[in-house]
Image (cartoon, rainbow, N blue to C red; front, side):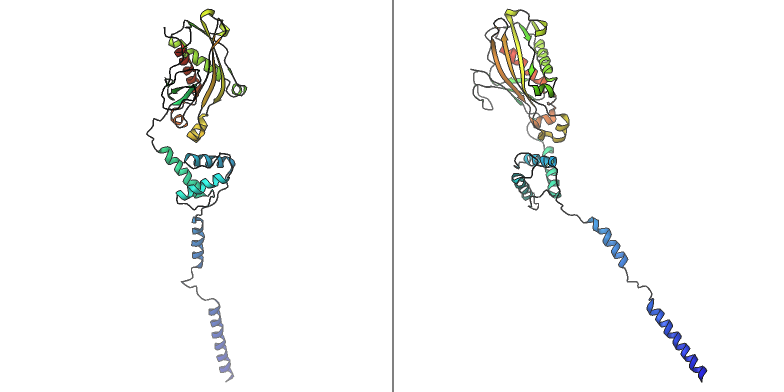
Length: 322
């Protein structure tokens, strides 16, 4: 009897032990996919995009202001500061381009500005790729004629093609009182800052003028002051002083295009009678190219040479008709 009891108790204990082990370590369920779900969640997280506000440097703000101005908005001066005018221009741009009107420099707004600039640059214009630059001279008592643009006071307007040195005169050049057969170039000058920044500008201008006058074959002798004056009684002395010069560098033109601005040169021209030392003509002349045209024609680098040809033609036109 006792053996039967112990045998029954042993079997019962064995069943309990086996049942406990099974409950403690259940077989893995086929529906348990938590690790896989976590992997999918972490993999998809980086794909989420947001319209982040970008902190711009001063140079980047200046570029943005110039771009907004080019697109027709009015941010004010390109000073590198996010002032009221710039924020107002940003909001207006956002409003007209279906963006959140926040005034912030967010990634969506900056991308849209770049896109609009590219579209505007790529659009063909009905005008010629290199519109004429304006060259003006001051002249007393010059006869006035109707011109495409208004003439201030007694000023004469000359239009210069930005691709070539040819020019057309809107009003006739006032003739000198006598014909000169010889020309002497006095030493040309420039403002100290111009001479420092563009040391070759003076010599390049003089060389261009002398070459153009020699090719015209209108004068017997053309020399410089260092070579001595020829035929003092019938000689015209030429002096020029460069008062302003701005040439847009090639890199700036390639990077910013029209937004780099115009290149220009202004000078004072004096024509002096060698015999009497009297100033027979005193002119202020200037030439500024068109920023959009210069982006295609490359007239920034030829500006000084082109100006020399213009001044040379002006001197030829000043001579009385033979």
